[in-house]
Amino acid sequence: MTRIETSGGVRGHAVRGAFLGFFVGAFAGTFVAASVSDFDPYGVNDDGDAEAFLLSWAATAVACTIVGGILGGSQKTERWDEVYEP
Image (cartoon, rainbow, N blue to C red; front, side, top):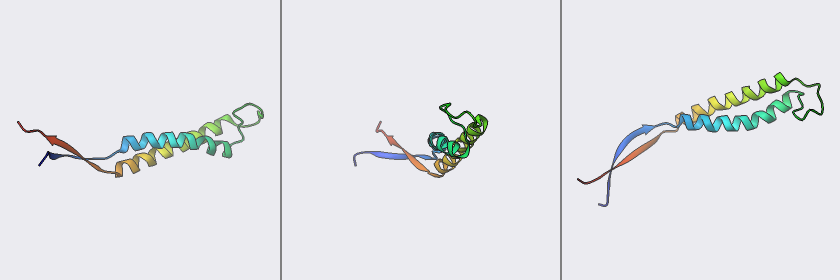
């Protein structure tokens, strides 16, 4: 036998999933908001609605953060701690 390990418990990854979900949602939210609103972020066509753009972007980012947190929390992994001989 080369080593002994004991279980350190099971943990979820909700925080990691929420962070990943936020970054994916922020990226995707840019495209969703651009397709939903007429806002031109480059200022070429100034007849768009900046509030609709920001609201669409934020809603997409928040929704993806929540979904990422739920999916990350449902992924359980077990930690293993090595036991050393005295």
